Image (cartoon, rainbow, N blue to C red; front, side, top):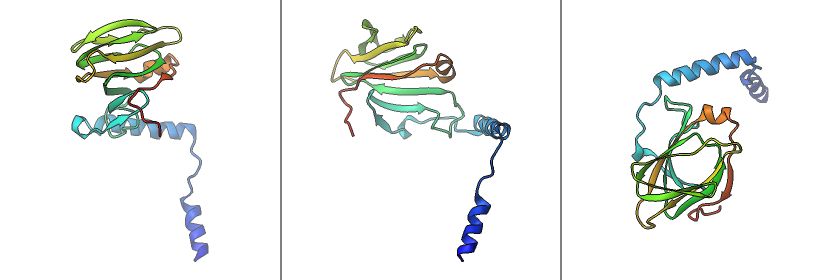
Length: 170
């Protein structure tokens, strides 16, 4: 019995794959996903996640491999009082859905309200920023859109400077 188990394990062990064969399979999987993946993302089906940066719903993320779109990050963030403060490269867009408040970029305040678009600047070393609800107790939501190939090509890093007051350390 034990010999059969050892034989089964040996039969199922993966054979080494060449870089080309891996690339070939990966590209075909990527294309298949782009053609036949999920097209509509229903907000009601997305759980909210609390992180050190804030309270978010992630619509697009590389770990959501069921979707047709694969190279974007898109998430909604609820700002109760203020977000965490972090630094990364700019070149992304944040659409304000509801509420009013301000964003600090490298210490400079920029006011915004529902319907506005916040554009973080592309700067050497990235930009440190934080978002504030101008009317705590009132809803304040925005939607961030980040094109990953651009962020990766600029060697963007993500440095957390201060956590959201809503973040519960685990």
